[in-house]
Image (cartoon, rainbow, N blue to C red; front, side, top):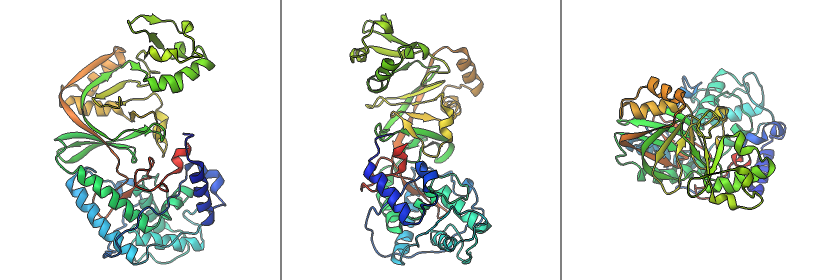
Length: 424
């Protein structure tokens, strides 16, 4: 993702340095971001400080089976906005001026600032004290904060966590207000079963009868090839799919690769076909020009196929779809903005089973057998399932847990709301 705006990247680093983080910036710079103020907000509200941080040491403490797209979520966000208005009117929260990575056992004056910060945002109880030693209570509170922000909840305050902590309360209030509008527009009946991909959250929810039955990590489009917001219906699951390269990828990726390595297509089992369906030998194409764009590039099914085992189709004007990937290691990354616009799904065979078992009666075992055969097998959905790609960067699903994500595509209203994810 080399299309990152360099001036913003410099501002990110300057901001972190101003907070005293220079001691550990170099080792973690690729995974960090800083977000400036985005919106002015209404000035009054009441802050209820009765938060319960017990059991907050892992991701489960902030997860919910309530779908992000639901009427109750709208109500919870409205309540969160009232609470954040109260935080703002009471002066917000303190900056954490850390000069080192904070974790259990560290003693530093900035630990007291961190403790106060987490108490105000509800990640720690009000009676958590003012100690300058990073103890187990603070560890639990920081893990809760990290989980609410989609981070690995490891209880270690590195640059990325520090940057998120030091986003001021007005900014967070602005995010909630902006996303409330989006949530309200999607709060009607979306289907007895539906699939939702939250682009900035890089996560998929499979919902049945108002309850999230499955969640999957996703990989979405990088900043120069964004995943679009859309509504459609899943009508087909293809096991062992052929992959046909879009013209944009042919032009931007494959042609440059062929100029460097003429064996690329053969090694990756990609075959060329002309308009009449006749196969074309790669060595007959002039790769110094763009004439290859007129050809069809089709990759055979198999483990190295760009979609690996599965493709999930739904009609849309953007020619995007959901699919498996041979690059499973990417799902272990925190920042998963890697694709050319389509959405890659972790553990997609479970999602396929969820889609097909109730519709066509396919079991996981049958799906595995078809994949093992290597034969491309399209399966039409008897009852198409609604699918929604949405852009929600702030929400709440109850229990006073408020979630925030980075505005990877800068859609929340102001250019400062960008992240270092764009530098990957």
